[in-house]
Amino acid sequence: MNKEKLVAPSVLAADFANLQRDVEMINESQADWFHIDIMDGVFVPNISFGMPVLKAITKHAKKTIDTHLMIVDPDRYIKTFADLGTDILTVHYEACTHLHRTIQSIHAHGMRAGVALNPHTPIAVLEDIITELDMVCLMSVNPGFGGQSFIENTYKKISQLKNLIEYSNASTLIEIDGGVTDKNANKLIEVGADVLVAGSFVFNSENPIETIANLKAIIN
Ligand code: DX5
Ligand code: ZN
Image 1 (cartoon, rainbow, N blue to C red):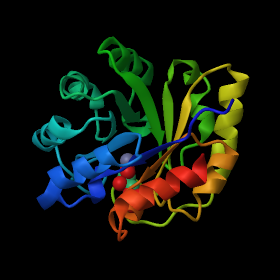
Image 2: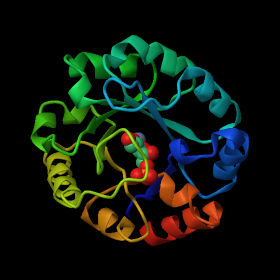
Image 3: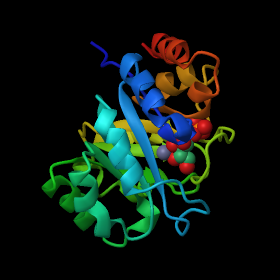
Image 4: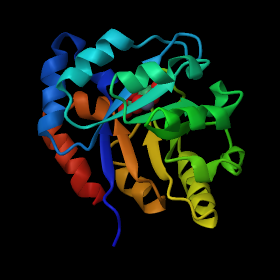
């Protein structure tokens, strides 16, 4: 049986002046995870939000917390994000000198571990670590901002990653982050994605609950 495909709305696109309302909306929807984008203004040219805001989110959130760190030297904050209730912690390949150690530390703190790849970073860099990873997040836009358009080369990378996962007998999930809509969702799943992050497509829609339900229906 095929495993269920997941939708992870990105809180980056929520209305921060109505954060509790938007968190409750995700709770009530068919969404599977909360996707939390943490940006430091150094690794990416934007600053999103930090620990106090994440604390406010997790106070109300009733689903898996999928935290995507777009920060340099993420090792400094692994314990902090564990304490804040993160279930899956994703770091960027490009931000980690000792990636293997970082992944071990995320696991040691009781979280699932993910690695994100920028659009230009080849899948091959994960060959020697794939069996340690619970998830790989393929960036389908350049990280830093919501609302950008999807980079088509991502399809090819999903197939390559899927091959690597199968060849290595790994059980790593493939997450796609950036520019996901009802137009590309089906194809993303067909080529091998397991989790779709969607920010502006969900939150800019007339009826986010319905938009999430539609996405779930398209991919399952
Ligand atoms: C981009 C973030 C994404 C972003 C996706 O740096 O990692 O999670 O919120 O937003 P959309 O779905 O609007 O491309
Ligand atoms: Zn993200």
